[in-house]
Each structure stands twice: as structure tokens, then as C-alpha cells.
Length: 205
Ligand code: URA
Image 1: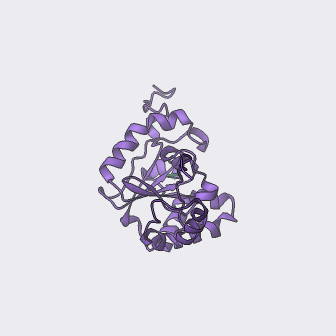
Image 2 (image 1 turned 135 degrees about the vertical axis):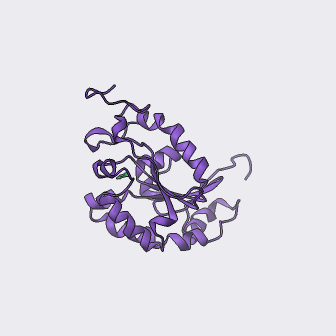
Image 3 (image 1 turned 90 degrees about the horizontal axis):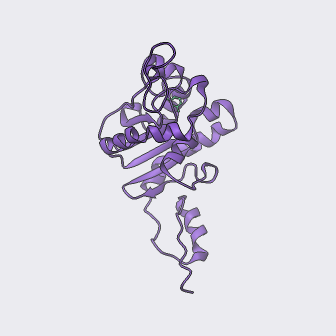
């Protein structure tokens, strides 16, 4: 129970602020944000506030519309005061999020901001990996800056626009070879404009 008599979601946040994901399922492309804001809670839909408007523009830069994508958030309830969801809130919403991943069965997952990137990867830095497709078994993950970041830091706007403009062509490029000499990793990553996960075999020369 919340103080005003409402109920709590398993994440511990007020269930009145719950906003479900939206879009076709299955769907080729899934976008994952952080948590809904006040406008999203009022309208009951993800990314319909100011950052959502910028997201629509970014989608159009990639030749996409909202009808082409499934949009959701790691945490489905609004954290008070628009604060970042805590790691424990993210963990509590994990089952819902995993269920969505199974239903939507995307080929491409685009994470919007650090919270979504951390929910799906470990050790990937948004600063170096933004805009670069990363193969994750069943799907390709593309880390992107959160659209709201450009509203707060205007110098990120050009980076976001360029990452989204380059999205289709990067997704269409073939994957780099599975094994290659260590000296070539940087060149291949540069050429294909991909983020290359690296395993080093220390037992051979
Ligand atoms: N920011 C998010 O991360 N998600 C929304 O739905 C809206 C703003």
C-alpha cells in the first residue's frame, strides 16, 4: 500500500505510475528506455513527452516510424521526482522485461541510455560503443544515447542524429571474421564501424 492508499508494483514504486511497452509483437526492432516520466504516466504510453518527440525525429533519420518498432522501458513505473531507477528497482522489473523480449523476439534491440545498456550488457561503455552494433546471440544490440541526454546537453544532439542516420547501413554490413590476428582488430572494427567483442587466447603465439 502507498501512503495515499494506492498499491505498489513488485519494483516497489507506485503502481499508478505503471506504463507498459507498446508496439507490434513480434517485431524486428525493440527500443528500450529507462523509466516513464510524468507525461508518459498521464498518457499511459512510453516516450510521448519531450524526449519522445525527439525520439520520433531520430527514428525518421533511420527511415523508421513508431509503427515499425516496439518501445518499452527497463522499469515500468515512474521513479518519484524523475530520479534514475535504482539497480534494485531494475532487478525487480527484470521478469517483466524478459517476458517482453521473448514475446517481441527482436532481431535488433536499441538501448536508449545507460540504464537500458546496463540491463542488457556488462562492461560496455556508452561513451565508446554508442551507435555501434554489437552481436548478442539471438539479436544485435545497438547502444544509443538517451534522447533526453541531448535535451540536457545540446552538444550530444549532433552525435545522436549521426548515430541514428548511420543505423540502417551499419545493420546491413556483414559481420567481421570470427577470428583474426590481434594487430588487425582495431582496423577491422574501424572499417566495419562495429564494436568488436574481444576474447584473447593467451596459450598460443
Ligand atoms: N524516458 C524514458 O526513459 N522512457 C520514457 O518512456 C520516457 C522518458
